[in-house]
Length: 266
Image (cartoon, one colour):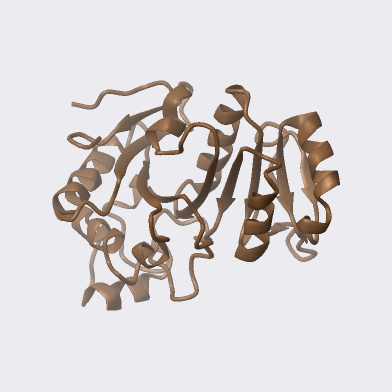
């Protein structure tokens, strides 16, 4: 039985503490949607929010972010950033635009830490991973780009990955996933496979800073709710050490967006 909730309490459900938060969003299948949804909810609560990236992201539209500010060296540009936040309360900050594809280029973890230390915004939300538009990913040794001072790590998995072929057209870094999990021959993505990937020491656990919360967000919709529940159950059963603080189902693109705590998990 799934108990769906309206989005208002999604930040708290994800473990973002009231007051301030420094969160990195990684994985595949809905990172950008989750980041800007959280920003909108925090803004509605009266907080100030900076959304940004440590890799690169598509430039948001006006509904996702009221303002985009380019700042090659944010520690030297704090007054300008402060003025923008005073006006819009939520801004998306980037180092530059990529001249080739127009994507926004992000900052190093050290620069993000400086931005956090400035105290200009109550919440710093960082998209810290790339996935080539695919719903499931296993990170390489160079990924994700997460600061050691991150307070909450949100790992996103698109539930539509379940049952898809385990190949590069459907899974980002599919060959790395195969070798890391010891999978041989033709295969489809299973709930158990996703759970093993989430808890593999060379996966996203490697990027989890000491003391940080880890939440897994299963991005879903009406047609994939069953798949999301199957992944959540497999992950909860395999996580005997309680490494994952919480598991959520998030239906963010429906006409009435909603979320639910995974059955049996707080």
